[in-house]
Amino acid sequence: NAGVTQTPKFRILKIGQSMTLQCTQDMNHNYMYWYRQDPGMGLKLIYYSVGAGITDKGEVPNGYNVSRSTTEDFPLRLELAAPSQTSVYFCASSYKSGRSSYNEQFFGPGTRLTVL
Amino acid sequence: AQTVTQSQPEMSVQEAETVTLSCTYDTSESDYYLFWYKQPPSRQMILVIRQEAYKQQNATENRFSVNFQKAAKSFSLKISDSQLGDAAMYFCAYYGKGGATNKLIFGTGTLLAVQP
Image (cartoon, rainbow over all chains, first blue to last red; front, side, top):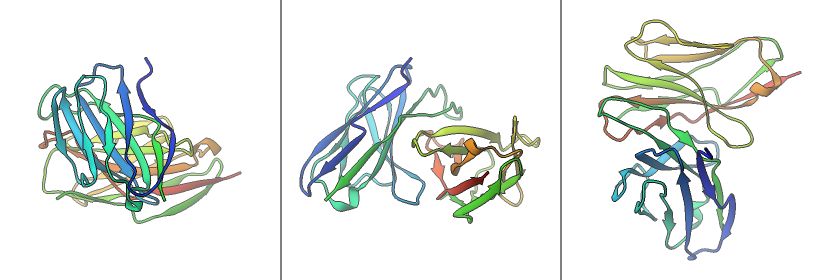
């Protein structure tokens, strides 16, 4: 198993450009997440998905969009890049079987994005 | 809303010595999980140890152990016989079982340096 993979590893964008961060997992997990990590800070949830076709906002969704057409893929879209979106982006996945259950979240290696 | 606080931005320890990283949290929930994640320079998020709130016994994983004080809402990580490979950013994280999102709430992290 490759686990959670993310592409690209690094990217520099100009203000106003758009891009998609790719995330794929091969563990048949139903839940997937996008987090961002600003310098010196912990991770904050941007969006999450509980299954194909279902997505919802996290703590910091502004400026981002997501879709989940398959169980494996959960891309994150930046439409009009801004300097405030300079961050490291992590995708994660887990399998959740019930409301109160918890199973470990597995993280991808991250994408370092700089917006100039 | 739940919060996680790590009051030590940086810590240093001599190789083979013991170090304790602090974490406090705030929640009105009674059932939850607490975690310590390690993030080395590779940026990969690695689960170090987890504690279930209803379990009074402190979790232990090899050289890593926690001191969980539920009433005080304190969750510290002790690393014994520190090794050079333990140098990393350490994040404390919270998961409330009452939520449907499986969302993790992270602290701001403690950067641990290990001196040879």
